[in-house]
Length: 242
Length: 256
Image: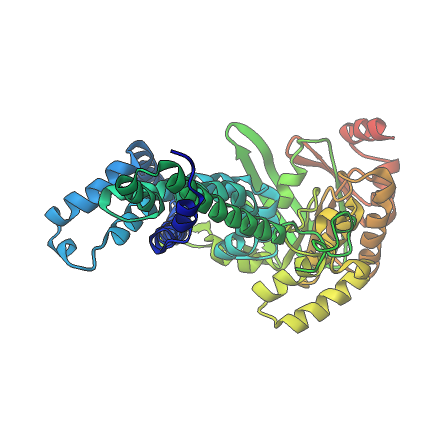
């Protein structure tokens, strides 16, 4: 059997592939947004003054890093409806279940990334912010957080890309994301090379787009003026004011 | 000094763990005066500034601004307890602080370093804040750098912006914590010139420094710290030429 470019091309443009890719990306994106917010809260608790909150947040990170994501998904999808009757209704789709599972697990990892990012901001920045009279929440939001974001961006990009690929785990709760779509086609046609290649192309394209997006965001956090020497060293396109 | 002190400390004490840093400091500065604070590293002078700027709580003693105690409030039992951070913040804006390592906000350009206090603390509108910030940056000779970020400035330039950032809030007093110690020698004078200018305009300033020439020329009074207490306080002429205490003579012999 040789590589059939027609089948490959047909797979690449097939509706179920596109839909699968869209499901993967959407699931990863909404999970990541919620995981980041939740992780930020957990990170704040971990570095805060309250001992009780520190212990609770530490337990959260410990628990969700210890158990396999796959197990979390299975528990939510299979055990959830047995324990909670409200989860037996139509709104509880594989997508919702996957979103819940990925968000709570990823929040534990994001909490660690954000904790280290918050701690990386120089103590002098806190002092100066407090010295000009900023109240605690403004010290955090106006001075510490913007600087922590810069530190957290590259590892968060890693997490998002990893999450995109982890969405294939949701096949166990019958979500037809990208890799499941490929697997389904293969099981009917046995054209492994063509369908797997098509899936590979999809992943490459999506991850490339995400990396481009990350570069754009990181550029906003460079903190140099447009006229500076650092800017002038860049190409003219990059030197455009942001 | 016959005036009521603008800023005063009474019996200020502070320890970190078992290390006694301040062992009962009585310090006072009259309005419009400049006081230079000298002393070896670790003698407690920076700690005193941190306590006076309400960045840390004292273990005992009190701090008075305009004759009123700050940083504490009356607790439920009627005793004096440290004020919560939110209310401390409001009192801090009246005490300007300039740090050894400048501590400019790395993510903000020069203009926004100076406007942040005005917009986020004083509640000024953006355009009025920018106007005041520009005027203040003009005063420290930094109006040509409003769009630059801290990483693009020399140490001397950063420190001048830091002075503008503190000054723009119109504090009653400015505290300087070794403002030129982190600077290359050729950049020291541009910062000292700005400070001398402020002193000439009647700004009340406490300057922890190793610059004895500046202390001699600009300060109304010089204090020597050693092992957490003030050893000697005198006008500069007397302090540098006829010190009373042996400890002062020893200190001066090391730095001359």
